[in-house]
Every structure is written in structure tokens, then in C-alpha cells.
Length: 308
Image (cartoon, rainbow, N blue to C red; front, side, top):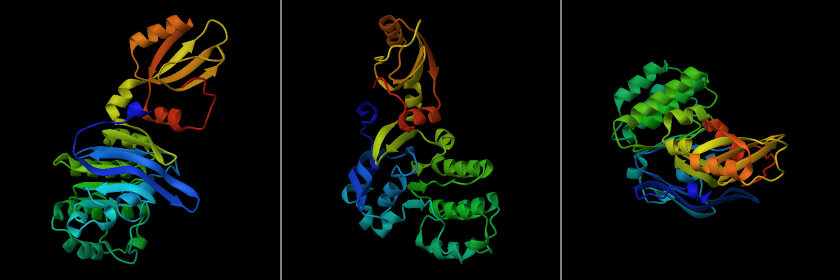
């Protein structure tokens, strides 16, 4: 998959270089390597247990890698100076801490810590999500608690916003509100967003780049528009039963179903398809794929793979 990896000269604001993280005998991260350029919005996706949250915790300085390097603004997040921590917004996948406090109390505590705190964003989030600032967090709904977490992450107007499953377990309306709020933050400045999600429709709507992690390492990293343009599914229909082996150039996955072979390929072109028809004698149809279909073909449960 090396031809998927972006090789760019843009200034990187966060980087993973050969990062491994072990828990006892289990490798959560296995040589994780990629970088995120300033001003990009990266969707960080993968199956449950792929290593997304572990990578993010290493990125924000909550865990130390077993080996390798993580860099945020070119520095080790574990020792990031206070002035640089003020440039980062973070929303974890877990509950907002201090459940005994009210939103008003949390704002009163956090606001003096951030010189760029934006009261207009604060008011907008409170109004948009109908947050009762006098109610203790533990008495709020899940959606309102996530809204408070988002408020604390974006009111400082961070240069880098890091979100771990920000809209998990929320209904479609609240998810849309969350995404709109994030988009508004990045629309007027050169800000960077790095967010994990298992909701691929959300990723398609917000992200301009996709980073796919699988078994603790990056399997794919590419601009989203380019990825969707270059990946196709080929439906190959043979006159009789399909051969037991079919060589399909640049295939991600090839599966055989009676007279048909379904091949998901990268680097699609009409010329490649015409040559494949000539070589195999099959009739070939091409189909565009959504992000979810690509994801399943890349990291779904194993099925018979005839070529790669």
C-alpha cells in the first residue's frame, strides 16, 4: 500500500514516526508513521481495537510510546510547554471530567487558562445545544455532556483540534450540529483538525484527508477526493465459470462468485480495463464506491482473495 501514502512538503503540525505502543504482550501500535500538514482536516478511521484512541492519547501526551517518536508542533507532547498546550483543543472519547460541576463552573475554571477564549463560540454552543449552564454534568443527557466537552475544546480557538469519536452515540441531528460547529471553527483560519470516527458518512462530510489504521499501523493515507476518484470496483463476468485465479493489476481485494469476479482496484483507468478485458475474455463493468464500501474491502473480515 506504499503508493497510497502522501509525500508532501507542507509544514506538518503533528507527526508519528515508527511509533509502537505495547501493553503487556499486546501491540496496540506497530510502527505507526504519518504526518498531518497544517490546515488539513484528517479523518482517522479503523475498526474497533485498531489503535485509534491509543494513537490519540500518545499525541496529546496522556501516554508515552514504547518506542518511536510523536511530535506536536515539532515537540514531544509529553513535555509540551504551557504556551503550546494552549494552542491545542482536545475532546476525548470518554466522559468530560468533573461530573459534579456545572457548565458555568467549568467555564469559570478553564477560561482564564486560555488567552484566546472566544465568548461568541461559548454562547453559540450553549444556545445551539440548549445547555443549561446551571445543571451539573452528571444530570445532563449524553448529547449535552458531549456539547460541553466540545465547548471546552473549541472555545480557546485552538490551532490544532483533536477529537476522539466526538459524535459517538449521538443521534443524527446532534451529530450534524457537532460537525457544523467544527466546520465553522476551521472555516476562517488555517486550523488543523484530526478526528477519529467510525461514522464514515461524517468523515466524508468533513475531512479532506483519510488516514486508515489497521492492526496498529497506517494502511492508507490519502486526500479523500483523490481516493474516491482512483478507486473503483470492477465486475468481471466470464462466459463460463470464472477462473480459480484472476490477476487484476493494483487490486485491493478480488472475490469470485460463480461466473463473476469482483475486484476493487486503485489507479483505475479506461485503458487498464480494456487491457484486462482483452487478457481475461471477461466483460467488465466499473462502479464507483462510497467510503464505507472501500473501508469494508480494505479491513473487513477476510474472504477468499484471489489476487492482490
